[in-house]
Length: 167
Image (cartoon, rainbow, N blue to C red; front, side, top):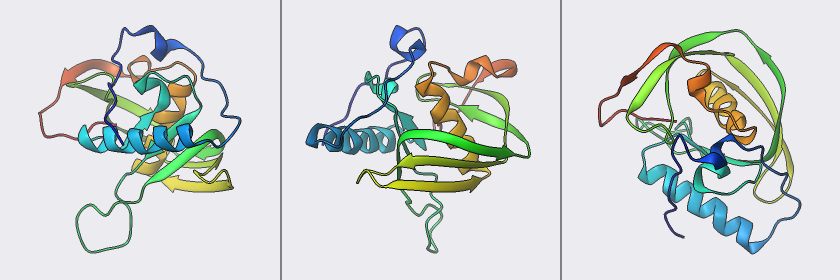
């Protein structure tokens, strides 16, 4: 496992459409592990493959919604070739991105999302999420189509504190 460089806004790879993942390989498993390590090291809750320079339809997410009494209980999710099936409701709130370091903005997204994907074992899964999980799924899936959250920001981007979590 290794930390990968996070590509930042202005890097052309972030504006490209990713290709579907066709097979489960040891290299894919290594990429997934590296993406989790990179995301956790950067205090993020989600990371898409193009953010580490790979044009693959792959995202990792951990919004800390696992079972337990601690404030953040890890609940890592791998979404390979994710496809959003359904959205509803609306939430407006602050959003950031590891590819736009030090900045945040107000974004409106669905409050509920249902997504179909393959897990890290290449088994089909369906995940339903609300709140932060819904926001993270939508945010990360947009990366796979070459979009950054800054395209959706209502108003201006602003500086964030050093200890705030970014997606």
